[in-house]
Image 1 (spheres, rainbow, N blue to C red):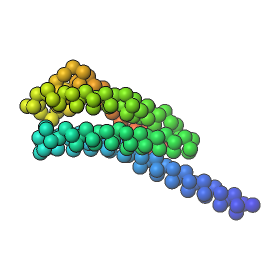
Image 2: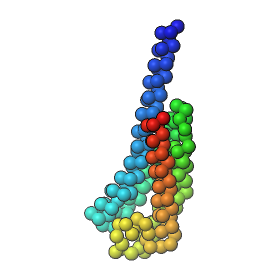
Image 3: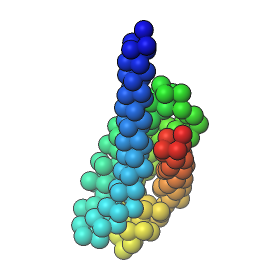
Length: 167
């Protein structure tokens, strides 16, 4: 009987380790992808491609990131935490921020951005364009709202990784 109990406890430990690893991987993507796309890649592409060539691919990348990548990663993180009886508060905060951005804010920001590209100030810097969009009030507000929810998501994800790594 002791041998069987030992086998199942080892299997449980292995399953927990796999779920933690999956959780850390998904949460790392939740942190790394937006940092790469918004803060590293975008300014460089804007600089090298120019504003007119930059906008279309960036809108597509943003759509892909908020429709698939971030929601899947955030859901995996919450599910893994729940499965291993880990505190889900930080992961849930990140998930809620992703859901709000993915379903409400980003679609509206992209829609407003498409309209603003026709009338935008073409002399804007990459940083000004990222924050202000096309210098229109609705675009500026939506761009800034996306950033606020990304920061909330990052805070939840970083807090969650800390909890997973230091149980």
